[in-house]
Amino acid sequence: MIPTFTHDVNNSFFLWFDNYLANQISGHRTYTTKFYCYKDDTIGSGVVYGSPYKQWVYDHNVAGATIPSGLTIDGVFTPTGTSGLIFDFQNGRAIFQNTGVSSGLAITGTYTVKEYNTYITDETEETLLVENKYQTNSRFTVTENAVTPYDCATPAIFISAESVTNKGFAMGGMDETTVVMKGVVFAESLFQLDGALSACADAAQRCFKLIPMTAHPLAEFMNLKTGSYPTGYDYVNTSNQYTNKIFIYDVTTSKMRDSVSKELHPKLNIGFIDFDLGNMRYPRS
Image (cartoon, rainbow, N blue to C red):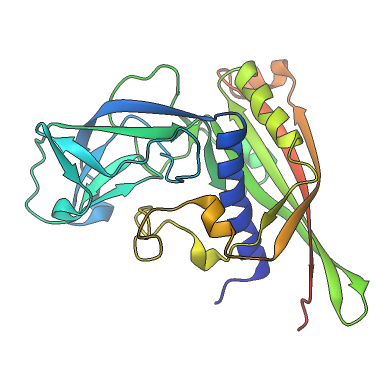
């Protein structure tokens, strides 16, 4: 199956949203921490060292972010590629793909973490709120140890494409395709929640480029595609390579009442975002 328009919209919105939120509210923090070895059978013979935080910034366009190029191992800086070293930016860890790497190394590293973890999901708001339980990965206080990979962790924003509608716009087969993107925000404080909702509301009447899914910067292990981005990934430089635009017609935000949110998730403040997007295209060509 080849990627469709909806796939490309999801990819484009995700990349734009990550960059926009990080820059609009300086939504990131930089840490220098130890890394801790743990077993992950999905990696095969590789050796994994995890940091205490998930979802590192990999976009060089995020102002003030530190994108790691290596780690300090036993007091010596070691660049990526050494012993097959790659970074899993999604799960906040280093993976040594070569065999024979010791599990007893003393490793530290400096990296920048997004204030909000961001996830593309197909789950409804009700499922996200009622059925799902989330791992807490606080940006303020943390017990230093390797964070568990794969599970969704808060603070977080879950994004989903609610609906896609085509409507005739001009002769010759041009349609206006409207897409409703919904977001559910799980914040650690009311201040943090208000900041995210305010920044999202201010995105109305903006636009972003349609970046194909094939240009997504992360590979199988959530490491950077160095073949596609040999000098690093920069959202603005990447988006400038494309001309097709998605317009943000309107943005609506709201908050769940505190009494309700505390009953569902006592340690979190919850909000909602609706993005109304539009694009002029020829879906039948």
